[in-house]
Image 1 (cartoon, helix red, strand yellow):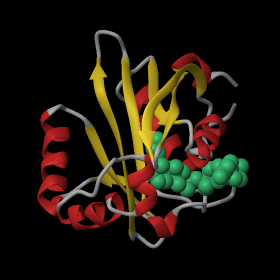
Image 2: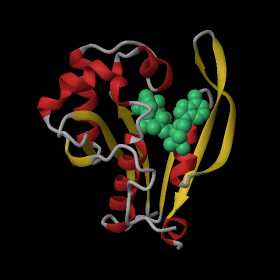
Image 3: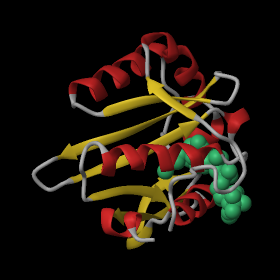
Image 4: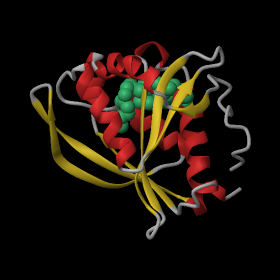
Length: 178
Ligand SMILES: CC(C)(COP(=O)(O)OP(=O)(O)OC[C@H]1O[C@@H](n2cnc3c(N)ncnc32)[C@H](O)[C@@H]1OP(=O)(O)O)[C@@H](O)C(=O)NCCC(=O)NCCS
């Protein structure tokens, strides 16, 4: 696969930059979107909880980046977390604003962040967990190249029902293969 052109799908192109304190109000809004609560969180978050969430990620040494669209407008955040250099692995997470979903921005953002993970941080593996009910996210991750490595049965609870959790992984060797 050739990953030089991260806009392979011909859809939304993003630019990643450092996530700043001024970006937190937007993050607070996205996290409280009903879809986010169902797919990422559990309950609504206060602004202070959102600030603490960002602080905690920084203290943990996560790489947290803002996602800007072609017009330079903030449309999401993306991060590498649980970075463990001794194992050469990290987890990845992404959240886009409700208005920016379904336009291909997630594909562009994931590809750029994975490029940083493998190309600059010299990771060997990037992984994630996602709710089995999140069809859009699962489709995106498969399109990017992730493989479902495990399915945890009835691992979470949302909207009055239990759902499976998928563990998905991508190896550097799979990313670099032409
Ligand atoms: C999940 C998320 C990152 C996906 O990014 P996105 O830019 O919106 O993704 P897109 O919809 O453009 O692309 C994903 C792919 O899934 C497909 N897709 C979209 N909705 C789908 C659905 N309900 N079922 C199956 N496939 C779907 C799209 O067709 C697209 O494939 P294509 O480009 O070949 O057509 C984004 O929607 C988001 O931030 N959602 C809320 C937070 C969240 O769920 N984060 C992930 C937690 S694990």
